[in-house]
Amino acid sequence: MGGGDPTDELLAECARLAAENATLVADNARLVAENVELRALVERLEARIAELEHRQGRNSGNSSLPPSRDDAEARAAQTAKRQSRRTKSGRHQGKQPGDPGAHLARVTDPDRTVVHSPSECRCCGAGLGDAPVCGAESRQVFDLPEKRAEVTEHVAERRRCDCGTETKAAFPSEATAPTCFGPAVRAAGLYLIVRHHIPIARAAEILTDLLGVPVSTGFLASLTAEAADGLGTFIDDLRDALADEPVAGADETSVRVAGVKWWFHVCCTALLTFLGVHPNRGIAATDDLKVLPRFKGTLIHDRWAPYWHYSGMRHAICNSHLLRDLAAAGEIATQKAWADAMASLLVDTKRRCDAARAAHLAELTARQRSKIRANYDNIVAVALAANPAPPEGRKRTRTEKIGYNLAVAFRGHPDEILRFVDDLTVSFDNNQSERDLRMARLQTKISGSFRSQRGAKSFATVRSYIETGRKHGANPFDILLQLFQHDPWTIPRPT
Image (cartoon, rainbow, N blue to C red; front, side, top):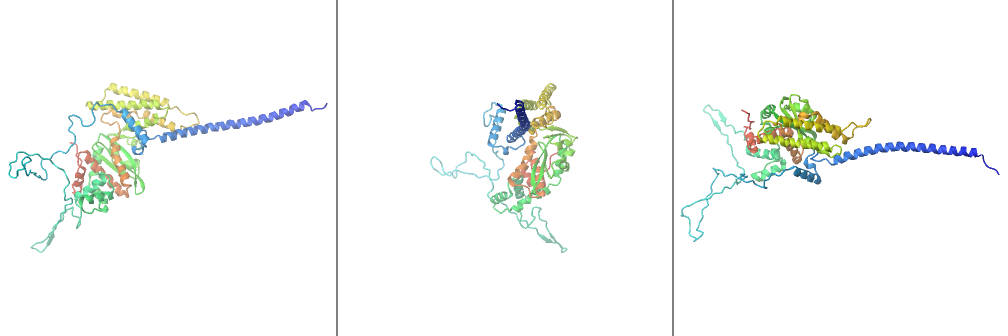
C-alpha cells in the first residue's frame, strides 16, 4: 500500500498556512492603515459638520449679522429670547396715568382765523344774523397751504448816474438763473434724499406732486455736493468737538463706491456724529479722517485690531458684541457652561450700573467692583480650562477656535471689557455707533451704491451735519434751510 511521505505533506501544509498567514498579516496591516485613515476622515468630517452647523445657525443674536439676514425661525427665536429677558414693570399697556401723551399743541398766533356763525335758531328757525354772540369754541386745523409753490420774480434794475455810468443791482444769492428753485425747495429735496434715503427719482416725483411744478432728477442729484461745499468749516469744528469728548464710540461698515468696496467710518457721541468714507478700512483710513489720532478720551469699539493702534486713549469693548459671541460659543456643548455664566455676569452687572446711574451715584462701591472682578476672573479660568491644547500634531478646528479665541479675549482685556463698571460715564455697548452707521447702510440698500467718490463723501458730510444737528434738538429741515440760505447751523460749544 503506497502513499506520500507524511513529512512532505506536513511541510507543504505549513508552507500553505505560512503563505495564508502572510496574506492575512498584509490584509490586517492594510485594514489598520485604512482604519486610521477613516478615523482621521471621520474627525475631519465631524469638524466640518460642526463648522457648517455653526455657520448655518448664525443670526443677529450670536454674530454680527444684521437682523435683516435672519430667517423666520431665527427671528422667532430672537423674539422669544428678548421676551424671556424682560421683567414685568407692573404698568398697563398704552398711555400711563399722568403722562401728557403726544398730540398737536395749539398755537397762540394762527395764520388765519375763520369765524363760523349759525344762520338760524335750531329751535324755532328764526334768523340769527343780528343775534348777540354769547360764547364761542375754537378748533385749530394744521394743513399744507393750497398754493404749494410760491414764485418770486426778482428784478435787478439798472440806473444811470448823472455822470453817465449805468449800475445794475445785484440779484440775491438764491437767484442763480433766469428760473431756479429757492432754498426751501432745495432743503426739502435734500431732506428727502439724505435724511430719509428716498431714491432721487421718487424724491423728484414727490416734490413735483407737492409743488405742482416739475422737479428734475438732475437738480436733486446736485444738491448733496452743493450742500457739502456750503458747510464751510463745519466738519473741522466737528472733529475738534469730538477730540475733546471724554467718551466716544467708533465703528465701520463696507459700501460700494463706483463699483469698488469702500468703508464708512463713524465716530460719535450722544450729541455728535462724524461720518467719513475711505477706500481703506484700517489705520490709513482712521488717520486720514483725523479724529481718532487726536482723541484722548475713552473709545468704545468692537475690539477690531486697528483701534488698538491708538495708545493715547483708553479703550472700552462693546459688550453687545461679546454677548453675541458668547451666544455663539454657548451653542457648543463644551463651551456652554462658562459662556452662559459670563453672559449672565455681564447682563447682571449692566443692571447694577444702570441702577447706580438712575440713583445719581458716581460709581459702584469698591466691594461691588471687587466682587464683579472676582467672578469675572473665576469664569475666565473655567473658560481656559474648557479649551485645553489639542493633541500634539493636530491644530484646533474652526469650531474649537470659537471658544478658545473668545476665552483668550476675556483673559487679555478684562479692564477694557469692564470699563463700564469702573467708569459709569462709559456705555455698556456701542449701540450709538451702530445706530449712526446703520443709516449709511440703509442708504445703499434703498438707493443703491454710490456712483462716485465725491457723491459718497458729500453724503457723509451732509449726514454728519444733519445727525449732529438733530441730536442737539434742531429740526433737520430747518438746518438744511439755513444751509441753503448760506448761514449753516453751528455746533454749540460748552460754556
